[in-house]
Length: 115
Image (cartoon, rainbow, N blue to C red; front, side, top):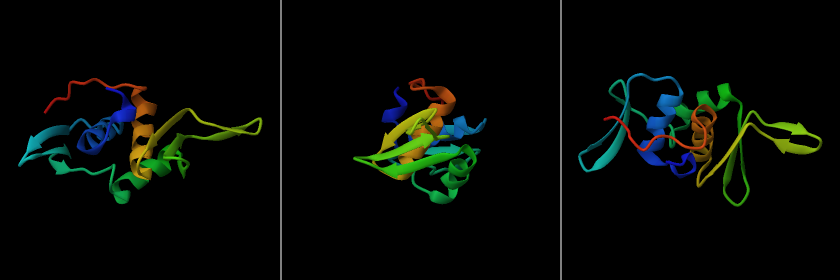
């Protein structure tokens, strides 16, 4: 699956995996998908308190163009803004978390997610 298409609980699951979690899980319960880390619900793609430390630590910059754009470790080189990884999303957190996942796993992650 393309990282640029991840959202919701599935994106949250992959953020936990990218952050080194060994207890991350993705499941369908009570009519909706949920991501947990060691049994605790996680909401990286919608909770600034959870995502903020990752954004700060990883040097992720986010700005609004036609969509929200996130850049991992951006630098100005010869007058142009460049970055190791660039991802977009409908919100700043989704863009930033997609960029974080892509910086750890590349442009695609496996479709198979263990429950």
